[in-house]
Length: 301
Image (cartoon, rainbow, N blue to C red; front, top):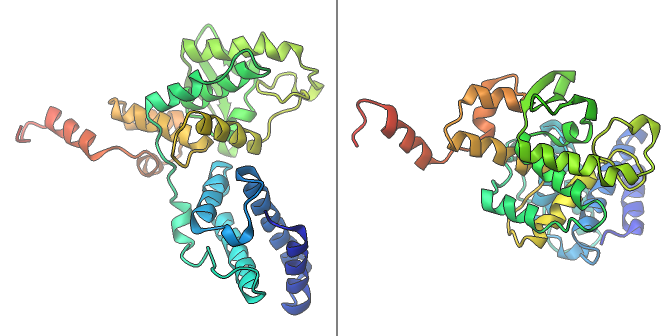
């Protein structure tokens, strides 16, 4: 648990002893508050002295899932390092959990890949009799079935779902639109929610066309998607560092392992460069061996 009094002391230290500008102090304050929210989301009883490197890495995986750029993550890491150095100085903690974490590794973080059975287990444990159970199932189906970014999921419009054609239109980075095929199972999950639970919400006018809503009829936040998935992962007994981006990553990886064309995957992911897709989609060495063994005329079988 990150005490507000400790945060205040750190902010006073930055302002009075480090003589940082107001803008810098505000930025540090925001970053520490974000870290506090993350710690609260994983445990309401975790003490500062018990925070370890894995918790810091989990926080940056969380930021990655929320779409924070590598440069933003590097800036936040700088603030965390300063914060924990301060805690060491004040003898609040004994060991600094950020000491071995370096900025270059942050931008290249690749989330764990879920197996198909793990994803199916996540879907199967959702209790559809509970409020918004159908919504949560549709969220998983769409993230995995279409490979969406979280920002694309929460802004998905009902009017951009072409049920008869089995396509959805997504607005991605840079307001670029793309069409993605959507399977019948995923469409069924969406409309079980849209024509069921969603009909009983008090929907705010500005979100009347937004697919996924919270109990108050407002659009879901990126943080809420993270929390939903985290709970499902725990309930399914999955021991991996999983977030929303893991489902997008699994979507691409499973397609490639199944023999999909890299450029087709690139288009569905909305990557402007195929090199991004090559880095982003981890294809196993075994699969690569199977490809060359199956198709290259000079490969020794």
